[in-house]
Length: 153
Length: 411
Image (tube, rainbow over all chains, first blue to last red; front, side):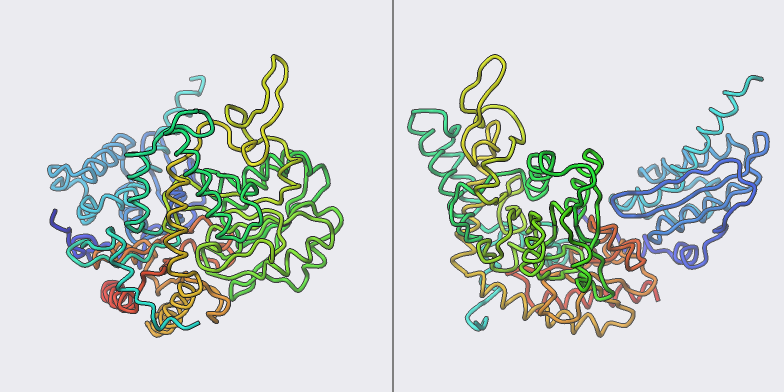
């Protein structure tokens, strides 16, 4: 098997997000917060969303971990502000497909900067790092759906 | 003793797994604190056992069962010799160090620790020497107390006297830290613990690998260690315990092998150590661990220790010169066994490990099952390079060269 190249993993854009993460702050008026950790390696994030109606009005996170996990969640938050809940879910599904080696997902412009993480799919042990933020997002969307569904009207 | 006549390059030839390339580069295996590679002699012993002697132990009258039983009990004598136990029946086979500690926390702990009693462990412990005691404390309403560590990763023992009192029932301490490499003064701790009547359990998962262990000299009550970090197979380990303690302890698990007579409403127990070996044991694991002890004895633990010291001295010096590298644990090799935990600038340890892996260098990254240690140093993870008898200075050089790659990407 040919070895994957490190340069495909550590793209400048990823390192740039790692050094200067976007939306890394406490969100004062959050409506949902998900704490997600990878107990094996210690990567950890708290994803905070303010959801208004069926839209994500704001997305922030607090976290620590490797460059892949932190860059992925940083990039993810930049795509979430103003997105509908359906769009956010579609983004998570598409990104997960890309991580599992789906080439059409890797060319999908809807992923924006997140496509820089395509190389992670060639490093199987690091895929879980890239998915940490999106796992938290899907958990948040699930929780939101349950909360809304649970209300009397 | 010097390591003059000790040639790691000759020893490497005994280990088939070391002779391979990873990502196109010759493998440099520096994850020995997680598990060691296995010499041909151990692999052959496992293979030959299954091919020639395989049968269940202590059950049959037939020839194969006799051979299997002899092999299993001879292995027990070998591991007893490894730690200078006076009687092989004080060595109980377990699944590993973790199970050995759990055996003590349950089979001894539940009968001897009660409400208001104290259990003393340290911040440095592997999770396997923390969590069983937390569970015991919760079940018995006992109090769990900690020996702290200082900024060089050593136990703070100045106030040991105030941590020990007549309520202290058990002190459980690692011989050598898996995350920091610190060699602990377990003999002194044992003496202080015994002075207040506490029982002492030593986690020797790393200790029995890197240093000569003499349980009679240490004077501890329990010593636990496993096979796979010392050239043996996974899934086998040993609990050594003082005979008089093992004899009065309740069983750990019930089943075949551990009984004397079974009646409708009650049973009586087999003698020590069989009392603690319910079910068909890991016979081949024991045979493999015995072969590992033979292999290591032929080389000599003193020579292995001297070699590791030389490698550690070199590694601490070389790694210490890499810009941005911060090393955790004691500065002196007298107190620092074959493990180096480090971080490097703002490169996360996972990223360090991935980059090194692409250079063929295997290190561990993470919290090393020692989250309390990580918390003490305010890091979420470290990278860890750990050495063994087959490690060479060239391995250290390859590690340092790999770190140049880390610097190239992250600086």
